[in-house]
Amino acid sequence: MKGKTRLIWLAAFAAAIGLSLGGCGPMMDNRATPTSVSISGVPRVGEVFTASSSGRGFSDDHGYEWFRSGSPTGWGTGIGFGPELVITPSLVGAYVFARRFSASAGEGGAFRESNRIGPILPEN
Image (cartoon, rainbow, N blue to C red):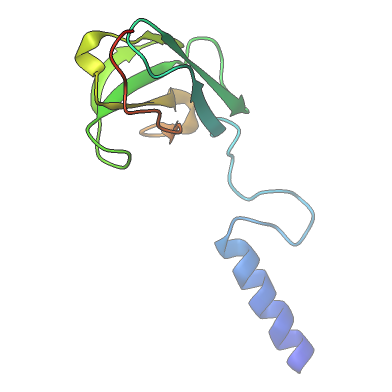
């Protein structure tokens, strides 16, 4: 009886985290969910940050939105769109991050947030 109880518990746990014990793969369709988003660049006025992502289900028409924040963990204010962001004097002291969206991920879409780079330094 213990073996049957363990199997039932394992099946319930697997279902709760989106796995299938039958070998059929994930129970949820997550093809449009990005695995990760990252940004790179020198945090100085005049430099350019570049965003990149890895994952499945994104086409070229799904892009990045850039944000500025006053802290490494705070909420952000939108400052631009696209794979690159030119660092301007208005960003000095801020932390910058990007998000990648996919409208094809279902109602409301899906997004992932990048690492944060900052604080932005003034031009040399």
